[in-house]
Length: 254
Image (cartoon, rainbow, N blue to C red; front, side, top):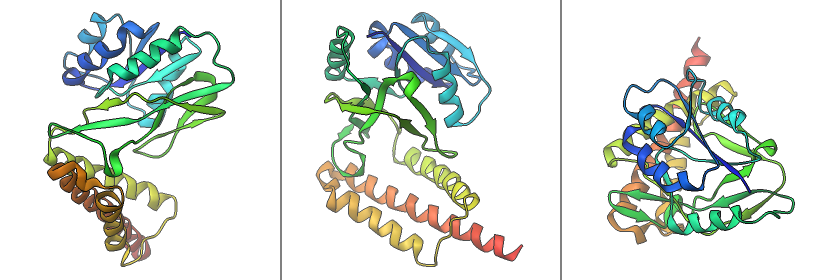
């Protein structure tokens, strides 16, 4: 099995070295589509022999489909620059690379584990966060709205056990700021799709998110970090529905 490792980047100097160190020796090809980095991203990509292509920002969905279109191998492993392969996941991928028979499998999923304030989060809404990242290029496409793109795949998906490590947030303040940005984009997408939100939607959806993550999925086992994640996540969900309701009301008053 030959694998093209594919990434999209924008000013990822802080993360890219760690990401590529974890996977470059497994890659038969490294393809990076960059939307205009002004830091050391291009230099780091060059050090690892990556094919580095500029593409003005098209949105998450089209940017990721763009990098897939440039891959030359049947199999692709899609990574974000703030992720890395864990040692266990590296071993599984190496075993797959030495295998010529994959049957009719279209992809392989893997659990993603977030490092948050110095702690690996293994409960709540964030884990196992299983994602299909290794797949046959011709059987997939990315779809979705302005944020949180999803992979659409045709065929069977086999689970792997090793974690994909995710270094997503610098701290709780960064978590809140990104949550606010994502909530706004989500609300715009839903409004344009004709969705509505009732008066109680922000409270009810936010409360359910907190209960699910902290209690039902045992986020409390992640200590103080689990408490903060549950609170910030619930705040983001409540904000999504409040912003959607505001857009609904403006539309009615136009």
